[in-house]
Length: 364
Image (cartoon, rainbow, N blue to C red):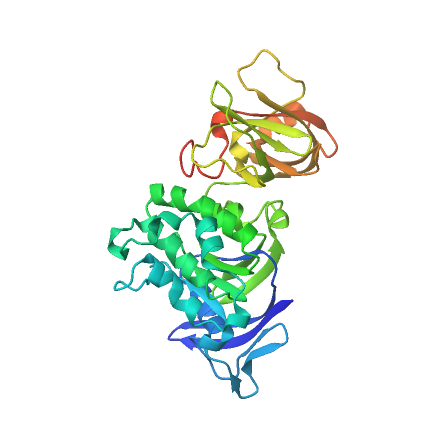
């Protein structure tokens, strides 16, 4: 099933002009700089903006087009913005039940106990809204949106108003939400880290247009990916994380590949997780240097090499499990090692450098 949007909207000097089809599976991130039109596009999808001549179709449902217009209340969309927008005169339970009670019984797919368990908010049910932390409020806002049993969930910069510590607190719940709610999600963000941890695909936006829509793993193997503008190239591996050993290291397993990661703390989740590895934190060697402090030493095969004018070269390699691993090295080192397509080598990654969900900005 797809979401089809054709719309043109002008606000002063800014023009949004889109004609795109978005797959409705998993999480699609609308990514781009502030002011590129991400939120405006989200508002058109929600029916909060309805430019003349626009067409919005969700599967076989026409939400706008040909003289028809379905208001937000009938689109069965869950909305979560930067600010939580909770009802201050109701406690947490009252906020959660607000949309649930207004959803026809035959359309209710999600219920209070399972949503509370998913978001870890069962202990908060009797609290007033002013007794909640920022992260707790945002989790309650997500719960309220889910309890409307939406057919589409729209998240507009849900972490933007939170401090770093609170972002670390709420990120694991967003990860669980994307896996377990079974509701397609459109996530507006300008932060590459959020895309890399949460998205299945990315819609890159620039100056009011969607430039392209591609799967995350494709976006992360393009040397010119906009996701690399801030921190440089990043790899994202999928796998499971074990409990820490006596020395505080967890084992991250991805197929037949295993890495050691510092214990991220928090609730242990053995389900599929993502591990971010910056290209600058990957060292390449022709042979395995055994007498070294780095415990993560992985055999890889070079797939492609991209050399830039700045004296840096991006080496895209494949692990034995088929996932891509990117290394950013100097062009001088590339020549000295003689690495070309098909070259076997060893990738070395310090455990301190690995960015596992839950650690947030620490270790960078």
